[in-house]
Length: 273
Image 1: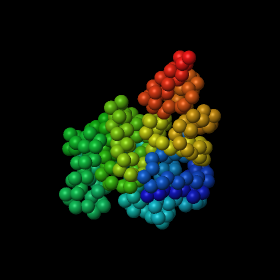
Image 2: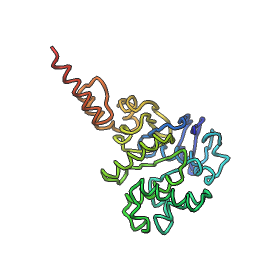
Image 3: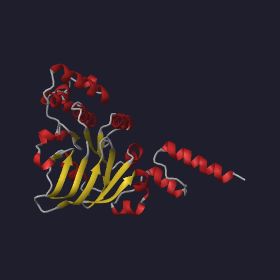
Image 4: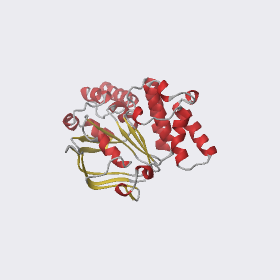
């Protein structure tokens, strides 16, 4: 399901212009990472997709729906949104009922709701916590509850706002596996993140924002290599990119595995007669 921004601008009631003439298209089943400094407009952009915000100018399309003509509840059938702060999203008295809320409101049968809840909780590793109150869990687990609640809706579009924040290595690894599985399933995935290492490893396309505008939009390797543009957005390249550039490697790797391969090839080239 295509997401499309057409000349979208947005100003908050206080007069702050958060988006300025945004043109952006995310094709069905594609995954993109949106990066940039605090206040760049990343979350404002994402909230236009699920209808929490409406354009001051321009149009946002989710498939054949003009979001300005749809309610948040209607858009929730197409767009799943995992908030940056899980406490803005969780309100039920148990993890199980929290995850069941969305599919139940879609009108699914009891059996299908239960199946969706079990599958989503298993996916995030929280089946054992199903009976607990969400606020009895650590904040990183509450993030996973919010993610499970979104996954249970089985929406064609999934938006993740700073998903790795507060997660330990195991949590980041689990999130990475979920992102990869969503891509395999053909879902459209939009991630907003300051974690450029995570973005470089799991997203082939990167959108760089600054001051409400898009500075760059293209393959991750190209955008992550543009130190000049990243500096304009007050963003540092991923560590593996910085290291490869410091070593003047011919190719810019995005993962540790790629770096190992490229570095080994460069060393072999140095010792050839």
